[in-house]
Image (cartoon, each protein chain N blue to C red):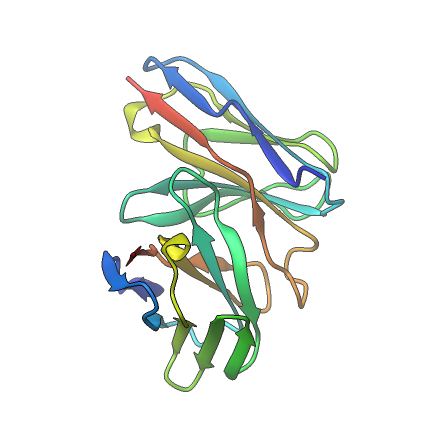
Amino acid sequence: QKEVEQDPGPLSVPEGAIVSLNCTYSNSAFQYFMWYRQYSRKGPELLMYTYSSGNKEDGRFTAQVDKSSKYISLFIRDSQPSDSATYLCAMRDYGQNFVFGPGTRLSVLP
Amino acid sequence: NAGVTQTPKFQVLKTGQSMTLQCAQDMNHNSMYWYRQDPGMGLRLIYYSASEGTTDKGEVPNGYNVSRLNKREFSLRLESAAPSQTSVYFCASSLLAGGLTDTQYFGPGTRLTVL
């Protein structure tokens, strides 16, 4: 079993839809959780960072962490064609063990 | 403020050739990283440097060497390139590896093809 699992997609939604992206993990030592967005042929860019269970909101984006279930989610409200990208979850423990999920490819259709 | 820069953007090598990928950051970060990204595999850590003067192996270090030239620069060297090293290489930096708010910032990547 991989440390971090993520559905690769592709996920296609119409403009304006609510998008839910998810990751599961097996290592209970992970304490810090991130979501990155990666446009085609570009480097990943940090979207959200959280280190506690619960929700964190930033504009149209909400990151949700459930440590008891080892499950994290990213919700995108009012999705736009410009949100079309690959979304990577990432997590690390108290040290330097940084692990990325394989990414979910999202297409938002106008 | 350019963030993390990488050179070259593209490179084609023949099997057995050597090359060095360059990375520089201007954010005064202490830690720097090299990853490779392959389809379906996600980002895999090759080497990292927690601070100037130190380097450590990541998940997939075989066939690579690194040099932390100074606080700003971290290079990745392929001594004898193999087709299995065809990939997209990303450099990243963070303020302080393992710190409470440690998050990584990425460069634009180098697309390497080994024939």
